[in-house]
Length: 244
Image (tube, rainbow, N blue to C red; front, side, top):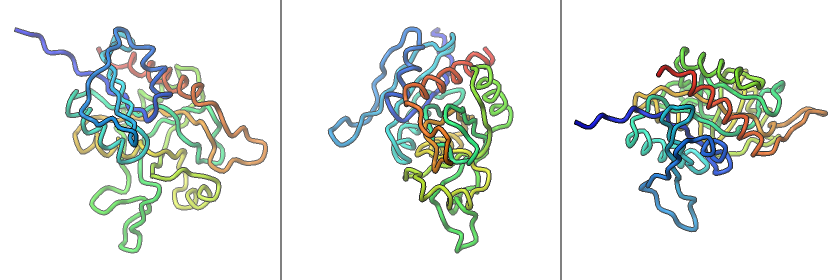
């Protein structure tokens, strides 16, 4: 009888630059086939499997945006039946006091641009969905400790996602709509929504690469390769902290 393979950790990133430091950490890294089309208009979904800290792990590069993240996450979860899903890579710092290089640990997620408030829904709430997607507290606790063990600044809280880059003109109105929101990106909430729909635990460990409307004197940008490395270190610590 063949012994079934243990369920992997599924790590989702948007761009190859974010995947690179994770893939380099995989022992026995092997590229996997995916069902996604590769053409000039769409960057193909990439999946690489291996051992991260001795734990089976699949790193999936989804492409940028809500639709790309949703499609790749749906396939990856159904194909690999992971023990958990982790959103990694970079994000924009939305909170006025957040700094570049900080790892944001998401414990709640919503849509930055969704607005059905005229029908009585909360800002960011899509009809038929909760106002906030909540991370399991135990998983978020493990992620927060892992980020701290990676030796970087850590913030934990609400993460926003939407198909718009949050430039300075959008930042202040978004802060007013979502007091306390720490970051903005284009994939995390989509991946969280997919994981919730398929019954898989979800956490996020994304590092701040740019500030959305920085104050005077703030460092507002960190190179993507440096930010990706910060996130990858936190993800590796998380995977090492999971029960065997």
